[in-house]
Image (cartoon, rainbow, N blue to C red):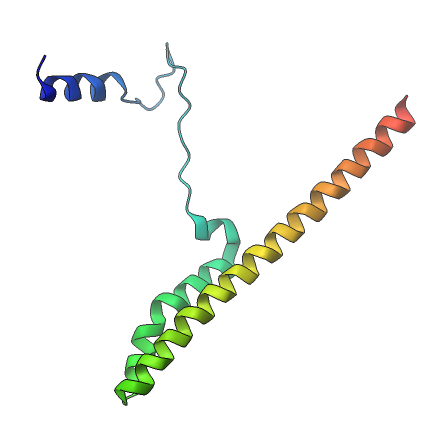
Length: 111
């Protein structure tokens, strides 16, 4: 079998048809966008990072200062994203701990 035929056969056998679950052990992979997991704050941080070169380019005319501001903007948005992510993880861990304590309390009272 030629390489092209093998690839065509492999891709046709691995296609996932919407709504067709007969004989398929595969679950449909959900779309994952890292910024969307951070909510609205993550979206705005990303938007500011993308828009920073346009804004800095319009406001700062000196090339050396412009380049410095762009580097600062890149580092600033990266740090802001990490802060938002760390805050999100902290909230999730606190929520998990509360749920674990509630489950343990319920288990102790029910037994």
